[in-house]
Length: 435
Ligand SMILES: NC(=O)c1ccc[n+]([C@@H]2O[C@H](COP(=O)([O-])OP(=O)(O)OC[C@H]3O[C@@H](n4cnc5c(N)ncnc54)[C@H](OP(=O)(O)O)[C@@H]3O)[C@@H](O)[C@H]2O)c1
Image (cartoon, protein in one colour):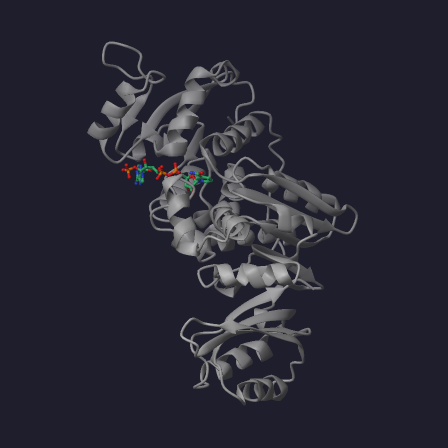
């Protein structure tokens, strides 16, 4: 690839799962790609399983019990092959993907990956290796699949001071929240449905607990602000505690609940977080439903800019991987990327929001007074209190408290103190409200 005169570029593909298979099919079958790229070698863990799978795939099968590429189970057959120009890593996770990616960069090969976990944890180190060895690393598919958000952030950050990014960047949790909002279904039922439809994995932790969105916002923030955002500095709260009652109450207040990721820069301080938030129903972001992703970027010159699309799936992700490949093919070698800022990180303690707090309390006199006293001690003023109907056992009621703007640390102290009250039945649910 470094030799611009070269006509055909050899590809080593690591991983033949969902995305790896689709990428291989396109490289072999699509005339746009097979004129320029040669899928030379594919690395798998289990040769027999994947040889048989590949033979069954009409797009890989070249007859005579042969397939169109070398199928190997030894990574050196890609990393140490001097004829391979580009390595496409599609196995996911940090180890051994990290080792394969680093060794490939050091060997002077360009790397394309869709691996958000790896990029978010090692972006600075990988960019340094890429610059040192003059080999590029591209990772468009790691955020928003086929939505060209990485290129967009890089492009805008050239001429703008990016001030903030906010977005719905996890399709699974957005699917769950929008179904709960639409038809009042409960979390567990919608999660099961999403798993059956293939939108959610059998272990949904990364999606519903906000970790997937955390990886992605760490990548977008680092590229926008040119400074690494350590994952441990990013506050994260998922959607498991949200019930259909919260949607019912939110609707009464003309609000909708979304899981949003944020990255912001103020002066020389940066901050990132992921949590559910109540948004006015007339905010366009409140209407982005199902498995769609949306990202809003605000820059000093561009103002606010939106991009929306399907943030997962074989076709969309393959589009991003092949887009990276094409851009390497056309690329200018001087286009180096560095994170050259070392900005201070702000934590969520100093964040200022309005809050929605739902409590299940014993229905008896004096309860409200105890709760109000805790708010007042922590200098938070209550905007409204709604008491809902009694639970069927006639002992408990839901209390929905909306606050005026307050510092996050104070509301966290309120939640801790309220949780200790005997009259409070279960852990309070706290949702931030968009200012
Ligand atoms: N699916 C999407 O919609 C989507 C969207 C955006 C980004 N991505 C990213 O794309 C990447 C691939 O995702 P996917 O959906 O294709 O996952 P997948 O279907 O689980 O495929 C992963 C493949 O990697 C193989 N593998 C694991 N460790 C390996 C190793 N050490 N050597 C060789 N092969 C190994 C697995 O093979 P075994 O059969 O041996 O386990 C499996 O075939 C991930 O980084 C993911 O985060 C996916």
